[in-house]
Length: 219
Image (cartoon, rainbow, N blue to C red; front, side, top):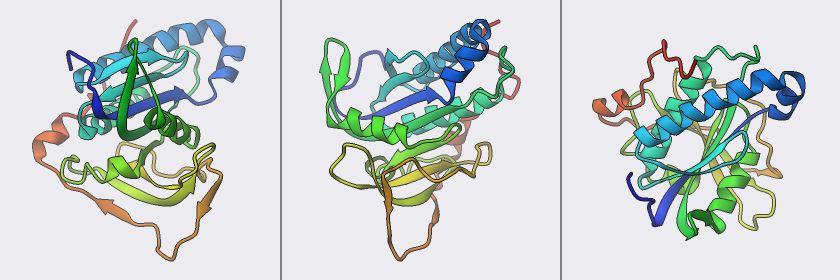
């Protein structure tokens, strides 16, 4: 998008799992890897119609006018990151969280309950995983690409948030599928098994999330 969206938007937050340890062990290589990581995410977010409004050292904060754009960006980015050969020799993995809510902007930055919930959702995530809030999941069922689905992880309480929420994991054949339990305060029990819910979209939407496996960003 050429201008940042306002009103109800979808936030995508990312960071690199274990980055502090990587900086301690291979600081020069991490400089190179982080520059390539930033270039890759910046390009993908822009191509998917997003607005990257903040770098956080080892991650980014971006917003999108449509939740399907944020999901496509996260999927594309995770596939692209997994395809890289990193200078540090480490298996660099990004955690990603997506949440839809009201955008509150001040001087080019965003704040408020929607950003707070997205940040706490990111805290619960593992490297290589994409978590999606209930508010976003309810909006994307008619716009997900073929092969993309959501795994219902149940209701969870997140730090500092009074209201628990249902959390979903983005699933795709090109993404990792098995992760440890979420880093939430607790999972709220229910009597339903975890469901894998497929939302099939139009064929042209799959092409918008495909990433060539020969992709190499930077030098």
